[in-house]
Amino acid sequence: MQGLHKPLALETIPDPTPGKGDVVIKVGRCGICGSDLHMTEDPAYGQGAGSILGHEFSGEVVALGSEAEGLAIGDKVAVIPLRSCGQCSACRKGLLQWCEQFALQGGGYAEYAITRPHQCIRLPASASLADGAIVEPLAVALHGIVLSEMKVGDRVLVLGAGPIGLAVAYWARRRGAARVVVQDLAEWQRERAMSMGAHDFVVDPDEPVASAERALGGKADVVYECVGVPGLIEQAVQQVRDQGTICLLGLCTRPDTFNSFRMLSKEVRLITSVFFTQQEFEAALDALGQGAIEPRLLVTDTVSLAATPAAFEALRHRTHQCKVLIDPGTGLT
Image (tube, rainbow, N blue to C red; front, top):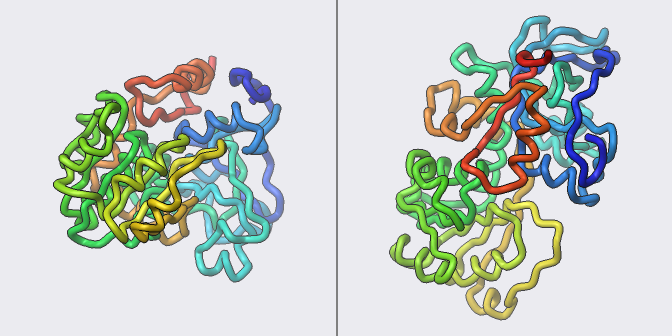
């Protein structure tokens, strides 16, 4: 990363060497996440020139520090990108995001990355390195489903057909929602959304509330806001039933306003969801290891490190792409 509002650049830097408790991963695949795009545009994310982006990655263990335990050279792993101590009460419970040493783990846009052993989850033989790179967004979506307390038989509305929204649709259908509707501003992801678990896909910017209600057969029991733009909380308040739940997963750093009286009068439960637990990360990997096809539909392209800056810039605009993976082992020359 060259700095805010600047394109990414490919640079050659020394290969990392592990500290006592570290592990070096030869990156096999790394996903380009929407939050990576935000990191190059918004100072709220705290990233600057010289940062190596990439938190959705998997790979092979190639070096271990003298005090690194639990892994062996050659292990294939998915990396939990929640940097943490691994020893405190929160870490022992799998709540890595609440560790006092917490920071978001980057470094996946590279041939090699350093992490810590407790953040590495071995891939089963039935899961590929590409699978390992989509575990993180699947876990983010699952965390929202869990926090929302979605019930079997619920009517679910997902706002936004990006990777997180589509993953929410997948989990909602898998966990027994009676009706899952994805709403977006464009048709591009309709087929993918339907293949991943949605019963219907709605595009109607003029009447978003009425069109979603028709598709659901009523107000939603749970609305998942997976976009992160001002105005969608207010829309969700209108779309959810009395005493229903709105779960915010979309990252929005801009101020937003909504009619709190309307929310209060309906006794709407508004919750926020960020990151995931270790147990949810492992559950997402288990689903892939057991042969779930739907999550793999998120991946629409794989590019080399050399092609990453151009692919990254293209994703700043709405395209037919969904999840683009980086394969650092190809196209370096």
